[in-house]
Image 1 (cartoon, rainbow, N blue to C red):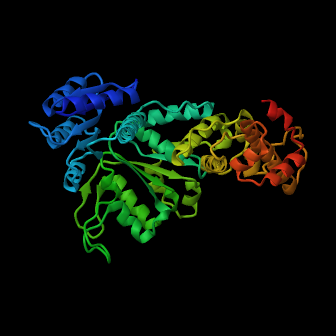
Image 2 (image 1 turned 90 degrees about the vertical axis):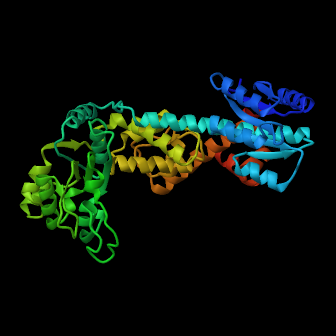
Length: 473
């Protein structure tokens, strides 16, 4: 039974009974309520709000006492998501426009045809149900985003890292996070912020080398109007934007020596002086610096200040590369696949155990970022179906270590041969699914797939597929 009801309002008792009777036949699992006036309808909505709210309102426009327009206004105040359909015997454009501007979802006229009534209410019910479900999912996502529960890592190295991040989070010291490119350093930084007393304040991330050196100072410290060409108004920088929160400085090893000097002064004084200003502003922001470089080596060659290094390196942690925590790859693949399906508006997809095992065996030199991009490619070429070994061979046919069925894993294979095997696997899997659906009817499979009937017959013959098994299923 639907978790909301439909309310019909009309001062004509015969019309009211007729509409309610038709709706009860069409919507057997939904409560259909009736009211003879606007006042009665409002009282009923307030009464039902605690049990099963009115989701769809079907109301006459011209009624004595509280008019349909006034009822619509009051009803939307009680339930802003209400889907209202207004009915009137006075089919004027002005009345329709007025009702729609006031928040009505649709507008029908008397005499109401049964088919029009049912079709309109069906659409209203669907609209309200989808809006209600969307609101529920948004609340769920928001609640999940605020949870303090850490990811359930499987590798010992990540479990230990999570403990270290939690210990660092309760302090206000600067943190230096090192690790290979794409290993997840920003994730670790955001975990520190999420677990810290600053979690309700802003957390901003700035990719330092992505900004020209002459603009980086302004991005960090802000500027005043007229400080340089194009500075048409005062602007706060990232330090002030992250006040009481956290600022993540990515690739800190690439900033120039002049900016390093200004950053060092900020860490010493905890004050920000915007470009072009003579006034400093105190600010309370925690700095977490990230780098994939060896800063101690850069100190030796003079490209990084030693005093800044010691200011940043109060607490430090190294993000392990993905090859050292392969136990976590299935968790990451599942999360990335769910995320990608959401981005592409696809239904959640399953992944074959053999495909997952193959992904877990790969070295992933690009680390987490490479894995994410690879999962996105799988989703794009999956056509919404499960991720299986055949799909992986199609996406990346020359990947070592993923033999075709019956093929020794250590046998050398050329790219051309691997691609042919991958396509054969894909064609066999695709046509098997199609023939199972059509019970071996090649003409129907041709219509559904868009392939010529002769082309399908050639593939069947080349692969030696037994059509009898599908006709028996």
